[in-house]
Amino acid sequence: MYEKIEIQMPYSKEAFESAGAAEAIRVGNLIYVSGQTGWRSDVAVQDELYPQAALAFQRLDKILNAAGASARHVVHLQIFLVIREAGTMGEAIEIAFKAKNEVVPECRAAATAVQVAGLFDPAILIEVQAVAVAE
Image (cartoon, rainbow, N blue to C red; front, side, top):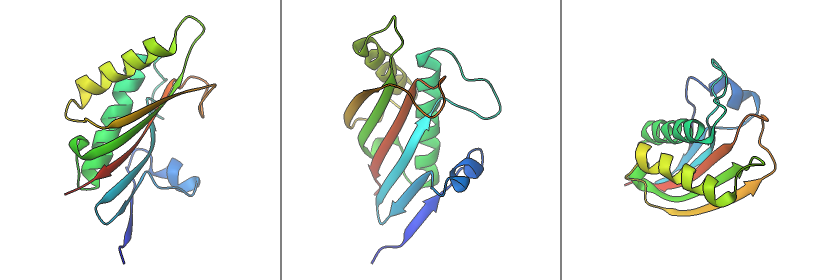
């Protein structure tokens, strides 16, 4: 039987622990990463999708590294997007994947993008979940 290992990052440990959740769970060589956003507790949230997406993918990469993997090990991405009145889902997907391709170009995975009405904070426009298979 595999041991379940919780991965908590110092900058978000308190938030995840208070929710009774883990930022990521590693079981054997499988890594399940909780939704990552462009939110930081120490600064105001950027108002645009691209900087939020870039930060979400940077955080994803850091968590994967802490779990003993990298973005190239991701096998599935699930991206939740909030669309503002002036935008379209197609434009949001293009922006999100532009950030992904610039921040973690080695991440080539099956992907699903879902439009949502909102996320945990009204300023958040993107949340990225991932499943990875480490070597």
